[in-house]
Amino acid sequence: MALNLSAFFIDLSLVLAIEIRRHAIEHIMARQVSSLTLFHAGISLIMLILYGVMAYLGFQIAKGTPWARQYHRYGAFLFASFKLTNYITSFFVGKA
Image (cartoon, rainbow, N blue to C red; front, side, top):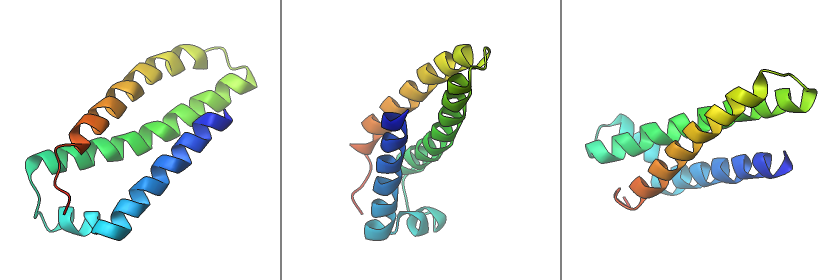
């Protein structure tokens, strides 16, 4: 559980660093970006939401909730798919 929470805070820190250094949200809101950058930003937002979902399910598993393990397994596949997509698209978006 501690590793998952650490990964979340590291990812959140990276998002904040990108926002502070590149003003990413302002660029996206001004629509001065490519469609690939918008796609990448959307995937990044979904990733942050999925971190919360996975943390919730992880806490449910730790409490012994029987249904949580199956959903956590499905969520892990979804999470890994979005994380890989986010990683790949990060190489193609502009460095603004």
